[in-house]
Length: 298
Image (cartoon, rainbow, N blue to C red; front, side, top):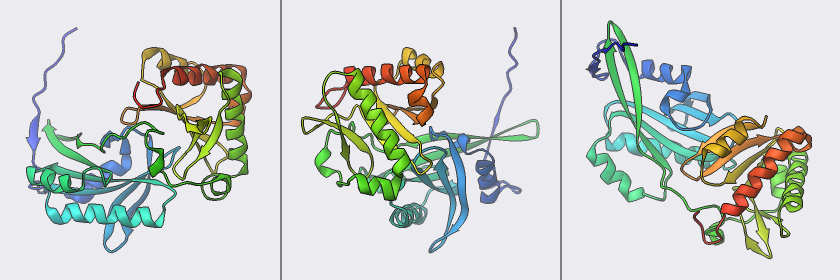
């Protein structure tokens, strides 16, 4: 089978007579996956009014992640960086129940940008995406490359003292509800019935983890949802066996988070009661428990 080679011509969007930022934003609105943020996203809002106008607000389809996205043609500049961070800060203060990430999209991420953002490194979750355009046969394509990611974090439970404490009432009222909390209890029972040792729920504001003998053992984290389902984050290295296990399980897998090293799954009550899905959850929990090290890492 012969493969046809097609020469692509780089195109400067900022100099293009027919392209503007709105055109680029429309392409992202049509398909947020082109940003390669690693999660299934939908457009929550566009041109969201703040002190200015936030270009795009994206949200995870089944999760608590939100992305404040600013688009710029041409080079990054300090004012655009500050505006991106400012919009992120406003949103996280308005809606603290979500996990917010600032996203800057530009044609050229300059070296000056990295110098500026280095001042905030580790304090602000910010992703920088370089946007390239290519033309061929009268067509135009966009390619997005992540050039700066959020600083990798330790495993859940490695630094528990910095986590803001919460309780069951907080999760029932603010983040989930009684239905999803009851499902979380069932998942805990499943873990205790399958693994050696007695585990309990450990409540903080960003997730519900596991404790054993008063110590964090967060190889699995739970995030009860208002929908009555529970987002399960199963911490384990990715491998083809686990990928296949989830693909064949009938569970609603949300993919693998390479940055924080966990499989995300949206679990319903039927999943806990069904033989096949229940068995897959048990196998996954056992794998996570075997891989977990109290001092972090795998």
